[in-house]
Image (cartoon, rainbow, N blue to C red; front, side):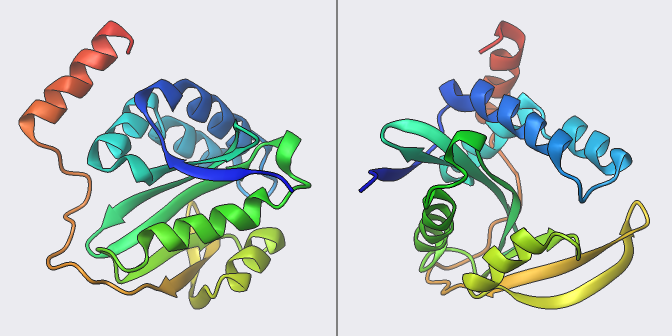
Length: 188
């Protein structure tokens, strides 16, 4: 039986995650070239570092036999955790790592500070929809001509929020912002 592990990313993981994310975005048949360009411009190494600075678990890495084989990228949004992207690297696609990743994501974020997980999915992305539905995500809306004129579904899963207060998005202290600027400047 394969040994699988989920862990929070570190800044040392940024290069690998960014490279694999860019490859994933390029390879997706469900999204327009305009959307792909938008996402590639948005998900910079600095943005990934910001997510890690807010909470390293926003870039959740999936490992099999000690090798990183995938990730789930998320961010806080006023009480909701928004799943931006998830990927299983080609070498690991015929393994249970994808299911393990969804279970690890839900296990980590349930009974914490979010009342639901949410994500957008193109209606024709049947593999993603099947996986989300398997893990109790429900379609709550069809957004017609929502992003660059294309339709998207909003899929949500209820979580058990146990902590007080709400995240206010990707806000960082002045010292964390300075640290990120220095990392960018010095290539770290």
